[in-house]
Image (spheres, rainbow, N blue to C red):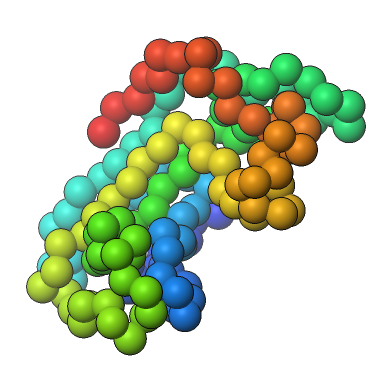
Length: 144
C-alpha cells in the first residue's frame, strides 16, 4: 500500500463528540514522534516481528494476531485520560485542555473499533472472522 507521513498537533487528533469517548486513533502506524516546539521529544517505533496477516478473502477466514492488511500498530494520543473521557457525560464538562497537560499515548498491536462491525459491539459476532483478533495467538512483541 501507499506510505505517507502525516503531521498533526495532538490536540487536533480527536473528535469533539457531544458524549466524550476514546477516539482519534490512527491505524497501521509504523512510527510516531511526539515533539515539543524546540524539537525535543519521544519516538515510538513499531517493531513487531509478527508475520503480516493473510491477504483479504471475501469468504470467512481464520482469526489471526492482527486484522488483515494491517502491518503497523494502532496509535492514539490525547491530553485527556481514558478515565476523564469515560466519567464525563458531556463534552462541556471535560477539563480544559492546554499544552501543560500530559499526553496519554496508547500503542496497540491490534484494535477492533466499534465501527468495524457496522452496528456496534453488540453484534461483534457478525464480523467476518478474518477481521477478528485472536487473543490466543500471542505473545505480541514490540519495542518502544
